[in-house]
Amino acid sequence: MGVQRSEWSDRQQIHDVVLRYCRGIDRLDFGLVRSAYHPDAIDHHTGFSGGVDDYLAWVEPLLRARLGGTMHIVGNHLVELRGDTAISETYGQSVHWGEPYDDARVNFTTGVRFVDHMAWRDGRWAIAERWAVREWTRSDAGRFKRKEADGPSGSRTDEDPLIRLQHKLGIGHGPGLEPGLGHQHAGRDHVGHEHAGHEAHGTEAGA
Image (cartoon, rainbow, N blue to C red; front, side, top):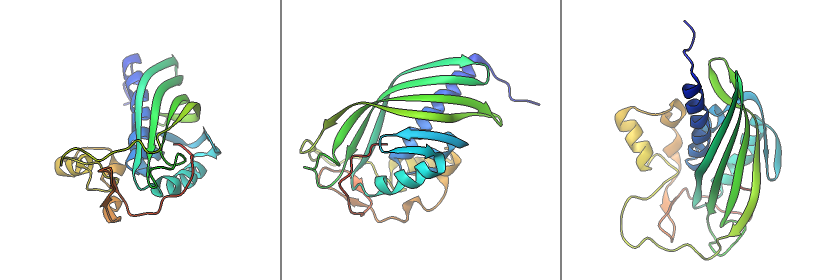
């Protein structure tokens, strides 16, 4: 029996693809990032253009080098459906932070539009080609501060509250539940963010 589809379910699944990508990048879950693309997908980012395998090989070391992290905030999302193909346009902001905190090449926010050619293949919607359109970039150098009190902090290891809850309840996408994410040493930076103990480097490549 085939997958039951409707316009509503197609739009919801396409939106989930966008959100899976954002979560995967922010949590360093590259299996989840990969799940947002078809195997032969093409990606165009600032500083990169090529296949999804090469994109992951390019972006992963850049993100792991950041001592703080990234946060992708999604806004407007419009989908134009045409059967088994669609155009998905997502407005958002991508926040990047890390040491040294006065370095604008590491601490910056971008205004981005994800312009995606989405395709339904093999029973799922995924990205066939993506253009990560950089609309603007703002320096956040020197703007981060400590948390005002103790409380839950984000981590790009399996100590993150989301990953702990997924494991506790057995809920979540498969790649997010695979072991190994927590083998990095987690530390805390001076603005209260968890980090993985890697050295930062001066690059403004945004994901």
